Image (cartoon, rainbow, N blue to C red; front, side, top):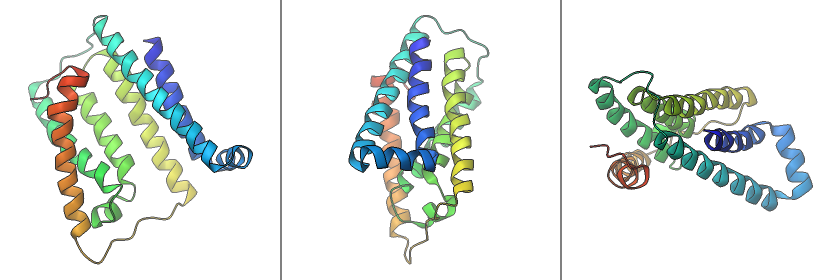
Length: 188
């Protein structure tokens, strides 16, 4: 439990620092942009690994079930994860989807966290996915207040096709490779 919470603190903490533009600018001025990005990446990856490993340990110790999700919510989770995968890919592709969602990475993270909250009723899952969902909501509000420029829709739909196609590939990789072999829980 402690390892997962520490990992969340590191991973989300470094992202909160990045959202505070004044602090971020000071750190870049002191360290240089390359060192800041390297340090940010190192902390983010470390926090993510600590979170994942801590989550696995917490669940292996015997998940404390608060509720048992109905089968229908597990099916809804499969659909939501498809949408989350498309949103995540759209974050990197100029498309109408990206322009419509405005911040597709955050949309994808929020859908991912909500979907996993619906499918899991144990304390470790509720803490993990609830915390990530709360952070994503905070970050979306932060982005809106900063007034960051919004993506513009391109003239054609090639980016949309790429986002949907890439999202389908990501979805399949997560469902058939990552989840059963890394997480240890088969999706299908």
